[in-house]
Image 1 (cartoon, rainbow, N blue to C red):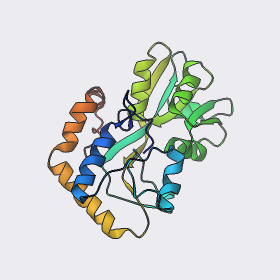
Image 2 (cartoon, one colour):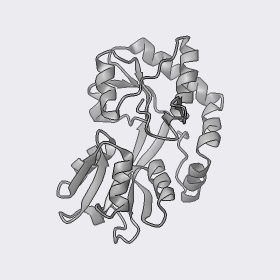
Image 3 (spheres, rainbow, N blue to C red):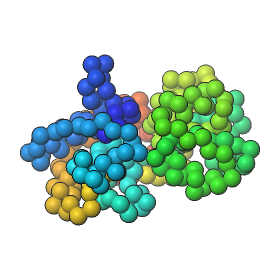
Length: 232
């Protein structure tokens, strides 16, 4: 995991891993009857670590897309989300089409689907690629970029932290599905992980995580008529 992404994966005040993904990982380890060891790695280092055998699984709010499927396998999806935009409060940007100009500048986080999307769909727009969420948000807060493209929940939370200087445009630019990353050829492990996810969903455990960690986000999505994260 990249432990810099609350409330999914982060560190407590004492430095211990905590969040939605951590709780899923604990339950998954119990299901597999294996000890759990969480390795804190930068997001763009997760796939290389999996491919070299340093880790067995990636459980880090990772979108299962075709580019990543070329180098690793994925479990069945467990979260549905989408890309959204954080823009300066006084910006004239109202939607994606407003970014289609060489006069615009967009912040994205290194190694994320936001970066992939922007490079593919905004070929003429200037990109600021940074390796931390907080750095991307500050680019918006300080008016140095016209938008930050990232997932809906993060954009919602960052707007809450900076309500005077930002606006959140939450209509999804692209629907995404998060899944657990698994090394190519690990078919037995993939089957076991999928069985766990099915049981975990049937038991209501995903709903409990939503109520525990994501109450405000759930209310926001319901208000917008967007399916909640753990709904299929």
